[in-house]
Image (cartoon, rainbow, N blue to C red; front, side, top):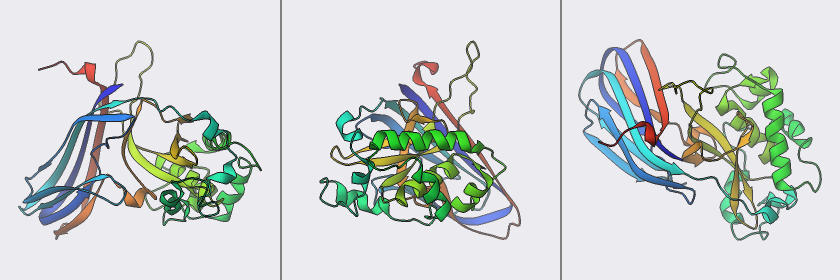
Length: 298
């Protein structure tokens, strides 16, 4: 599928901001299953410095510094992307999940060294006992990797409610386990804690999900949002099985990948520092992922 992705982030303040420093993960990655035809980031007010770089994980990061006084800051990211479903190695998926532990099995695959970092605990995906115990029901001895990961995905979707009011950006895996509710970011961190606490390597993926309207209804522009899912390492093939516990499905041609890291803290869409006397601020985010044919040429 070919998409036009628009992601607008707007900060408003009740007093002048004299200087804004920020970084944004808003540009989709070029990947074997994802081709990026174009991608741009524009910022208003015009920054004195806007530079793109590539981080430790290969993600594109936009750094900016706005020096003109402002009471509103807008970051607009627009991309055109083609996404294909990933074809996985069925034999690799049939391996026992225990082999997908690069720290315990460093010689199992040539890519084990690169996966090792993603088997370790990270700040937002702590290996709490409750998550370890929850995962054990899916990670039974000798179970195939693909089957075990998919079962965990099914159970998270069944056992946890999607509730925007249940958690905040500071909520922990323990909080999510206790409330049995959260949003996509929470379910991704939970899945990471479940897999990593048993030694498996898995990474946090940030991106977008194209929504499909009910039959006969038009798409609602702006109805999409930033999304998060997980990718579990598959030894042998050195592929990563991308799965979406929020929607109970493997990531496919509706998932646009922007960045990945250990957890949300590595790849927030936008973060930064401001210098101001403002007492209040508001944040508005609007994301739209539309099939490219919705936008006529010219």
